Image 1: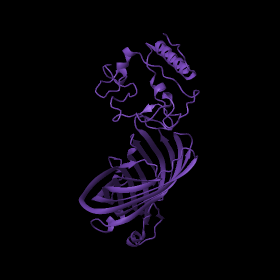
Image 2: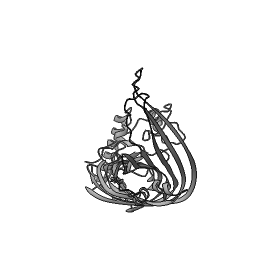
Image 3: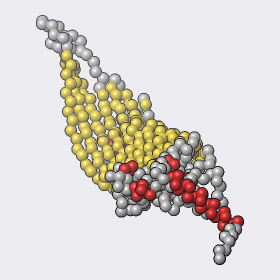
Length: 422
């Protein structure tokens, strides 16, 4: 005896869903896999991994509500093509990974091992393709003032009133820092800052002659730091830094020169100019610790970012003393007979000594920067910074004393530039 088949309403709905699903599978056979841009579409700059759910793959975990208007369906891949997109770690990369096409995940163009070669996306619509590490680049122009020169010992030494006492004032320079973060938010930072145009002069007229003191100095620094980007507002960093401060101090005496009147025999005037030059190199290398308050806020236009660091450095100090003598011989016209025109000859000699010393130098730096965000990638920045070094050899001290006589030097001033992150 046959029993009648009774189909309840819930069962009928289930059968209809199964039939619809089967129709989708049949129609999708032989289709190519989705493109990378369609498959990996992350929001808010998250790192892609197997634990994250791109929006095109469905509703993220934790959201029980399916909004059909926001789901982009990925049609299934035919069975015969599925092997080319296996995620198995032992299978070779596919052709888009630069491999032989024997296999590999189409999610990962950087390699077959996702934990070793993860994808990172940029911070916004201006940089939303799959890239390597996140980058942050800061480029600033600087105008820093250096500790002034105390000309009092020089004035006392010369014994006459100067016609000019000039100071270093502000020197133009530049600053560039680049930081790369991996998918674990660990970053490597490389930075440079320097100023190569500090000049100060003192002039002392000596009758028709002139005694001058010229003081030139430069400052250059390069550093390598390790830091981690976290949700905490204050972040620590550590690294190595090399700083070089060069100082040139010159005591120059220039005689007034003239041409003798024509005569027979000709008149000869000798003139001697001398220079006493001290060339110093403070070559400092050491370890530094620092902290910054990374206040970059994606939802704010303006942020304030303070930073500071300090370190202990080994100063490999080099000192050279050069003494130059320039002798100028001016010969007047010979009225003859025969008549001979006058002439000038110059003879230059130099000798010097070089010494090397070592000492410990302390360096500290602080700064505060205002950042105005133009978009998610670009920002305009401006701020103020100060750097102090204790134990640095100065040119004017080397003029009066032997060896290394450590002094404290302060640089401070404004900076202005732009910032880019991706």
